[in-house]
Image (cartoon, rainbow, N blue to C red; front, top):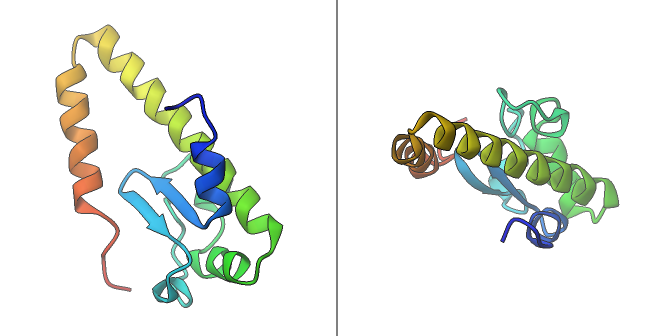
Length: 112
């Protein structure tokens, strides 16, 4: 699944993958949310742009929105796989999988 169009297709449709799960930037609740997608991400698209700005780009049909979200999604998958490879080498794959799943389960439903 990682060697396919999924990250870029999702990005073009307003969906961002993060350490805390998926974020649908088409949703109106992001219109005034000035938090980044992921403040700890190594990807500038996730770290340096607000959800409100990304929401605006997606809702207005600007190509830049899909480009930034695709960049975020590809970066997320690269970091995810880097973490999995490191966990395998350290013999901690089960712990890593549980920790990653906990992050997704927490989700992105924190109040503004």
